[in-house]
Length: 592
Image (cartoon, rainbow, N blue to C red):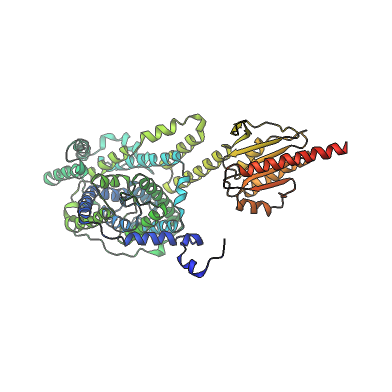
């Protein structure tokens, strides 16, 4: 390949020069500069945007409550998330808004702080979450989400759902339990069940009944809003004593989002680690959403670009005192159900929420808190995906590491701070990946049939003298995988002049452990006047082998570069090896 001219460099894609982030940033900016869609699509997007804004109203306030801050901040997040995230996201219909998991995690991160400091540090946390996400996106780290195992993510999300239910029991029952965490508080509530506030419980029960019933009627698109509105109207007009409303938590009348700079001087290790943990969970959830919502115009999606979009949305949300935001599966489903056509539906949702907050904040202030708590309890129960739990369990005891990892992550989520539980989950995912990739190594012997086709057979345990054995290996050969291969390779023992041909096609890199294993095996073959051939070797692997002190090319080890046609380099190696065996036999005959 010739040298790249200056003119070519000017037009060469930046990823060819390995400049991380530039292509992601460029694509995100191009998203923002897309032409406005035709009027018919724009009208449908406006309707879809209004629908998602209205349906997000109860969830937004409930998530504010869930995070332990004023519910209005949840609505601010429903403004910043869709407006900013909708502009930059590659997944056009994905709603970037406040989610229950991120609200719980963010609230837990600042729980240990004094009450008077929490609000300001909370918004600092949201900004830092956005910074972490944007950096991860610009570095192209979206591909790393595939390494979080299904069982670990199932355990974590199930734990989050259970926490969601338990955390809202005090709000729905009007009883303030004692305890250091949600589990202890739930037991305290059960022990003092006779002390619950009956009027609060009745409003919560009415909310759940309405939510279930309305979903079977033509009003199902607005079931959440109506299910919260009716009990709230009852509380307002009948002045039910002891039932808390939103304004009891914080005054939101006349509230409008305003630009507020968080106190960056309050940055601490606890806040930074919490931001990283929340950012990772949001991004993993968002990646799951984007995989289920393909773009209608056929454009491909980019997980890294969606990382940048969610990062920008969180930075904006933090500066206007909003909750952390991310890809929301439930709200995205509403957006798709409302026949959204383009990213403008997401943007219109943010604009519609702005109108609601500015014009209707006085009405929102009278929303009944037990109703919000009841809706969150219902959401938590429904977010427990029994099908995922069953799928993990049905993997069987042969997959006990996955079962153990999912169970440990679930337990850690319930009893430990969520950032710690996330760390445990990530470590378990890494452990599972290394364990499974190192044990799922398969070695087969390739034999040529009379009709020219190739068959796979179980490899011999020991080699035969003056014979060529062709081997093919499947699986990851890094680290422990290479050591597994070492035990699978047939032993030379007393064989004379054995030849082993090992196919390495598709391997981009050997790594020091595999090089060491191959060198030791070549040495064993050399001791019995044998030889090791490596075939299907890529240019990168060939250079790696050539520069290795342990492997001596054209000595005990011989390498054949891969050819465009499958099996050609292996065929050439067989011909070369058979010629070498003939020469060896002739030399030994002369000596005798």
